[in-house]
Image 1 (cartoon, helix red, strand yellow):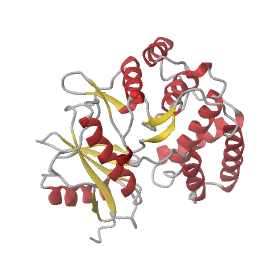
Image 2 (spheres, rainbow, N blue to C red):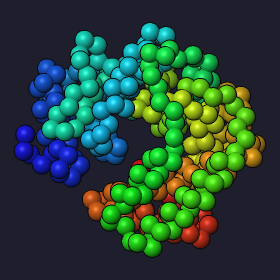
Image 3 (tube, helix red, strand yellow):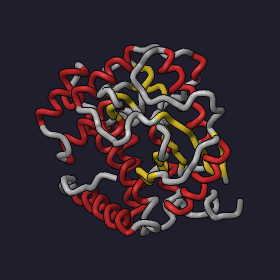
Image 4 (cartoon, one colour):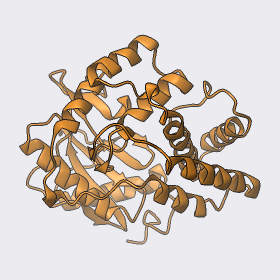
Length: 304
């Protein structure tokens, strides 16, 4: 294909739509009437007339991650764990015009999020599982992504890049001195209430399995703590229900501020890659960098 939708073109809704049509035809689905649910790290579509979600990865190098996500989903299903399911009897991922595409069973016709109580239960159960060696999960290395992302920030003012580099170096030094308290093992990698939805029967499910890896369990708790403590996206009651159902309050651990700083940095860098394609992203990136520079409030940070 020479549509501009592939790795040489911008990852826009129009470009992703071209990939969607080709991928659906290859997999035997009808793309007519598909609804774009989200355009971020993935373009996520719900197909019309069939309970299927299609995910098209922004990163053309994501084939290993998505292949692993499919394996993880099939293993979780064999364990009876409440997580999103891949479409059966379909060899995937597909690579279409340089983009990695996967097909998932749609939990229901509209996105209904689980609550923090249920997220805490899901993570506690997940952390009880012992993953088989056949999954070949990688070790979670947050700084590999940080440095790769910083090197690729070509459309961001140089003084902002220098500031973010200095901040990353400071956080990496502090990170190296952390005294972890929870067990090392399998983690979701991006656990937050946005990745826990309800199915048609009201049962909570974990979704977005791309980041499954081996790491410290604190990583699966930090976003919920950060969203409550710094962003104000959760109420105190909601947060306390999460803590009660998981069984540990990350904010009582001295290393929490370091993980929170690192997560904020990663969230800001992710937005930085979209400044040339989205005016909203450019405004949000400037807002976040200013808050980091001045240690200002994060209460006005917008969810992406």
